[in-house]
Structures are given as structure tokens and as C-alpha cells.
Amino acid sequence: MKNKKQSKLIIVLLALLVSGINLPAAIRQQPVIIPVAGNSWKKDNSVRIYFNLSKPTKSRISLDIIPDGDAEIVIKAGKKSRTLKLTGNAPQMIDAGTFQFDRSGYSTIELIKKSGNLGIARAVHLNDLPAEVQTNYVKDNQDNRFYWGRRGPSVHLNYDVPETLVKQDISWFYNEITVSEGKDPVGSYFMANGFGEGYFGIQVNSKAERRVLFSIWSPFHTDDPSAIPEDQKILMLRKGKNVQAGEFGDEGSGGQSFLVYPWKAGKKYEFLTSAVPDKATNSTVYTSYFKPADAEWMLIASFRRPQTQTYLTRLHSFLENFDPEMGDQTRKAVYSNQWIRDKSGHWISLSKAKFSGDDIAKRAYRIDYAGGLSKNGFFLQNGGFFSPGVPLNEIFTLPRNAVHPPEIDFSLLR
View 1 (spheres, rainbow, N blue to C red):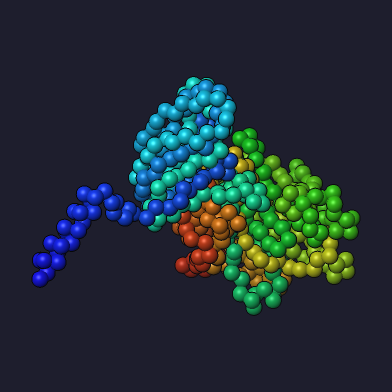
View 2 (view 1 turned 45 degrees about the horizontal axis):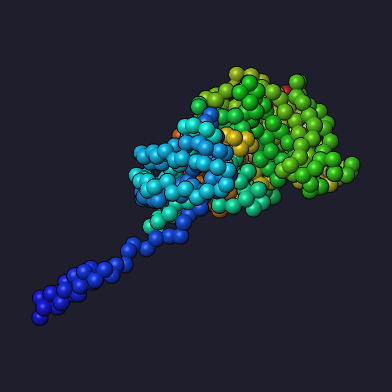
């Protein structure tokens, strides 16, 4: 009986094939449209577009482009390349053919000028992707996300401070950073001491200049420092030798100080920040010091923040890229030996941190980020389209608390 049923099924299938009726194909997605503006970097005569694939696959690629006259360009994806001919100046949708992507993680499509001009590539369409293949890329420009996406995901370490310690009033925060060699491209900000009202760390501002940066936000919320009322401006009380001070804007506004200093990857640097509330003036004074391993503590600056009475809260570190042209480069650092000191002079080691990310990371528009435990502390890494990364909101605990607090003679801090 069973053999008869199988025979009938085979006959039916053969009849369907002979009659020209197609059997159901694998379920395919609608075309995945990757905007070039938010996912690409130009270099010499080429444009490279980045996107992430959850598994190896193949795709028929179409190119939405506005030619700039007659030209020939090469499209390269996976291990295959093909020459495309462009004509005229009207927008065109060009079928570039089918390409194989042999691995999961980040992949690229590169457009290379062969003759004439590249034109303006507006989008790349990935057609016929299997339904189970997930893609990650910067999908839209709402709230200027092409800009933020090209900067790349910012990531943070949010240090766990028990509520009982918070109530003891944290007056000092100590941290150390060692930037990984070769992971310090221009645009990097390795922020060591973050707190509710400001941040303190080191930057790579250009190939020739590096800075130690300490900033305090005004209580007046604006991106325009000139709009801050006089009674809510950050007041500079004092600053260290060769430190420059002024205002900042765009991402909140307030007082800023920086020291041009040739810090180096592979070397450890120490950071120390204090907060002293003053009831008499309804303000808080924030002061930060910087120390290379082979030198004394250097005062960066001391600011008074009006309409504020608080000790240090919301302690964190972060890693960001502030140059969108460098969002295709990887940066990494180790953050180690975190300590807080209460107003009574007791040191407490911080051994737990939650890993988090900014809007671009949370939306999974960029997933080239990581954080967690390293041999010597916590680490943060972002940019450069590496994979795999580390999921957001993971909590990491050092295997043991640091035993010896930093040896600091506070009487010598000037």
C-alpha cells in the first residue's frame, strides 16, 4: 500500500514538471536597499559600502546611480568583480549580476572608477536574499543618522556603585586607560572619568595633535553656548600649565579645557576627578588631574557649575569616534583599576560594569562594537566593521577586586 502511494506521488510531481508548473521556490525577501550616503567611505577612485550579513549567502545586486557622463566602473563584491558601463546623466538602475558572500559578518561592495567619473551612487539593492538572512546597515537619515552612523557606534562602561556607597557621597573618581597599539586612529575619544555633569579623557585630534580633554555641561540645556544665561555659565576657576579653556557646543554646551599632550598607545595613563558641592553659592566645583606613568599629577582644570549641589554620580567611561571620515577604522582601549573615594577618605574598588551603546548601536545600524573583560580590566572597542561583536547590556564583573587603592598625596595636588 505504501509503495502505491509513493508511486502516485512521484507520478503527480512528474506531471507537474512536464506541464510547466513551477514548484514553490525558497522564500525570498523584498530587496534590501542600502543607502550609500550613510554606509560608505571614499578612497582615491573608489567607494566602499559596508553591511552585515547574518550568514553566508548570494544576492543579485542592483545599483541605483546617477552617471556623470560616459564611464566604466568596476563593481566588486565577495570574490567577484564586473565592469559596468554608464552613459548620460539620468538616474539609472543597473543590474550588476549575482555575487556570492562566503561568510557571515561584515561584507563590502566596492565601486571602482575604470574610466570617466564614478557618478553619484545613491543605493545598492540586495535582491533575492533568503528570508532567514538578516542584514545590518544604516537604514535612514532621520535625526541625521547618516552622520552618526558614519561616526560609528559609541559604547560605554557604566560602573556599578552600590546604593549604600552613593549615599556616602563620592568625592573622588580614579581610573586608568591603556589604548591598544594600532587602535588609536584620528577622531578617537577614550573617555575615562564620566559623571553626571561632565567627562574627562584623551583624544586623537589629528595625525600631529593629541589632547587631554575635560568638560563640564551647563545646567542650561542647549547646543549653542552663546545662548546660555550668565547665571548658568560654567566658570573657570583655575587651569594647569599650557591648558587652554573655553566653551563647547553641538552636544550640549558648557565649559571645556584641554591640554595638547603627545600621549601614546600602549602606555598607561591615570585620571583623577573630584566634585565638591558648595551650599553657600549653590554650586559644585569639579577638578580633574592627569598623570602619565613616569610623571607627577598635572592639573587640567577646575570649574564651578552653578545651580548644582552634588558629589559624583553616574560614573562611567566611553569610547567614541568624532570624525565621520574615520568611522571605518577600529579603536580599542583597556580601562582598569577603577576606584572611588568618599568624603570621609575611604577608598572603594569598582569591579562591575554594564556594557551599553548609543542610538546607532541600539538600533543595530552598526554592530561593530564590543566590550567586556580583558587581562588587566575592562575593555571597549568600536568601528572598523569587525565581527563578531558583544551584545549590549551585558554585565561584566572582574574576577577579584583591586586590593591596593592608588597612592595619592592629596596635599600635593595643585
